[in-house]
Image (cartoon, rainbow, N blue to C red):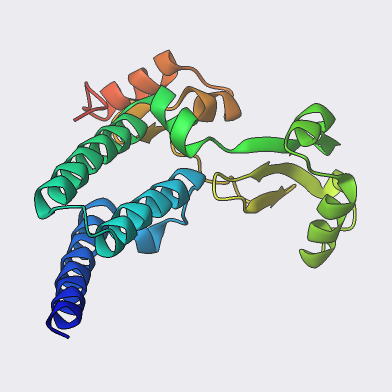
Amino acid sequence: MYDLVFDYGMITIKLAIAIATAFVFLKIFNMNAQLKQMTPLDIVLNFLLSAILSNFILDRDISLTDFFVVVLIFGALLYAVNWFSFRTDVGRRIFIGSPKIIIKDGKFNLELMRRLKLNVRDMAAVMRRQKIRSLKDIEMAQIETNGDLTIVKKGSPEYSVILIDNGVIDAAALQKINKDEKWLRRRLKAMGVNDPEV
């Protein structure tokens, strides 16, 4: 009986530690979760954290020291991945992705659609829901990094494009508006900004 009470007591303590750890990770690494949808990387990392926490709770052989060492290593790696993905253009493309233009000037990019495993029927259904009757009415359509489809109709005001994200110049965004980095730097200089990272 004593052993059973002790075992359940240890599980309760481990559960409390696991909940506190999960809370800390969510606070530190998902501060802007309400502004963004989860990326595939976020889902994988959440599964990994869940596996670490569940193993700690259920495995009697895992000590507190082992658990905290693993959590610290996981946290350090997660911090490095977040820094790399938000501070470098390469990291953003690898871990977050970039929007993909699938319709430009009323024409499908069929090669890209094949790579993304999209078909014309699905696109037509989305267009009908947005009351678009013809490809000729579309200036541009792109798949966003969260999987949403953005359609810009011809004659509508210019859509917004983020040219600098966390101090990193986005070359793909510049290409969308037919500008280059020299043009952007000249515009920044005219506004009194010498370094986009500031």
